[in-house]
Image (tube, one colour):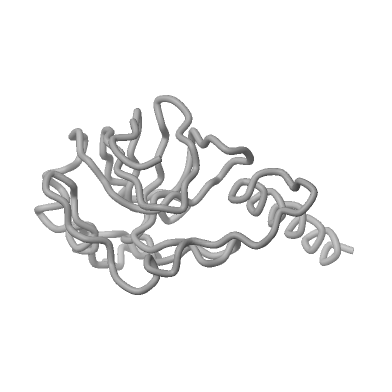
Length: 166
């Protein structure tokens, strides 16, 4: 019985995520996916935007019975500062506009999978909802290191605003 409940919950959650990407179904929603050029290469480095290479400068350190992130000095210097980040939006809510979402270094290719580890994703809490787009966006906000987050995230951007993108 519990297994069937998990399956049903997964299907409902999966459909909600798909609708966040594509909008509620219309007569013929048709297949939609990110443009293929985004899959071929990493995002270009932009002046004034924190690089995903910098955010990858973290190593796991065993502390008692768990692993916690050990951040490089470069990352620690960004903590609680206003920064700009570039990436792809992974919606966490239904609807065309997102107030809370995940920003990823690589484009999402599956509605059920994160495209990278904790060093390649940032939780974003926007000041006002931002319209979902397949193309990369640049957002600015207050960057926070999450040293022992129960969800396993390393980074959060709060009070974020869209700088460029759709």
